[in-house]
Length: 382
Image 1 (cartoon, one colour):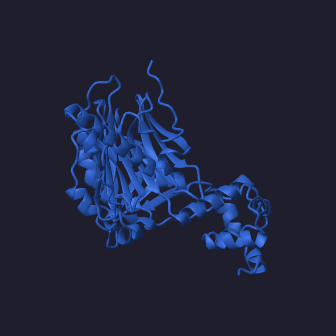
Image 2 (cartoon, rainbow, N blue to C red):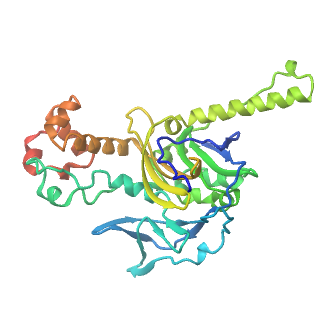
Image 3 (cartoon, one colour):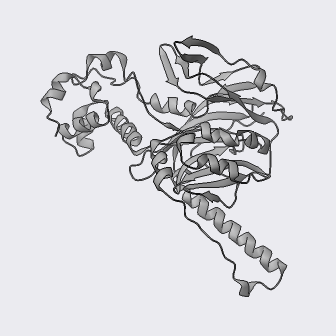
């Protein structure tokens, strides 16, 4: 019996090698290499041409966004190799014109297509989970909340992001940088802040999906990092006095690579050294599709994402999105309200705030519509 893939507790790059990075302007790309390649899992890109995609998440709940592409996961149940072809032949969903716009309708963020194929919407799967956090709003009909929120929850829940093409020099970096023979992924830093981690099952998959990073969406923070930030030009040196033969040189090079790997892993500590909260979305043979969020921190960068792990807990697919400071504040605020049953006074007390200060934070976060007008008028926002 096949061992069920575990639920992720943290992001671990075991089974992957971190290669020396390449730098272009504010962009640093750190290749991730895999020596042991599984052939029973493949990812295929499916391009979409619609201006807007509407995804039916569940009854009466829709997700609206621009979705440039999806990914089709194919696998075998017996470990036999899977060809990357064929997924392109699967259905794409319904399309219709809405004035000058082309709108596409899709069902579910991850939907089975055929016996051993699953279509997923990369990053949107993670973002939909983030948006749905505490989406139903107050669980008790506290008098401080508006009637609309008590009856309909937080609808609509909105977050803004930017496309990869808006990040200065990212397109040039992806075009110019070398792709390694065994490369299956990359850590993408903008001004030394981790903006994306992208992993796929095989080197062939990565070569086909390398430029798809331009079609991903990123927090607006990275737009400004790309404009005004820089990446450090780090140089490794060898002590010539200790080199007496080729073996010494080989050992010195191995040590440099190990030091580079450790340092670049350290640069990604906000992701790799954090607890995450994961939810299993789909089990595909011996693989598990999960989405996750790091524990929310007010002092570190926070991430949401999705992953596919095998029964050895090796990452076969990973994609992350870095939350902006404003997004983190909104998520943290909703988390705290939910933790105290949406009771404003208890939440304020737990945060060492006055009721007036908490209402101000709710207003500033864009959630003023949660509260009834009487409370908003009563509390003077400074």
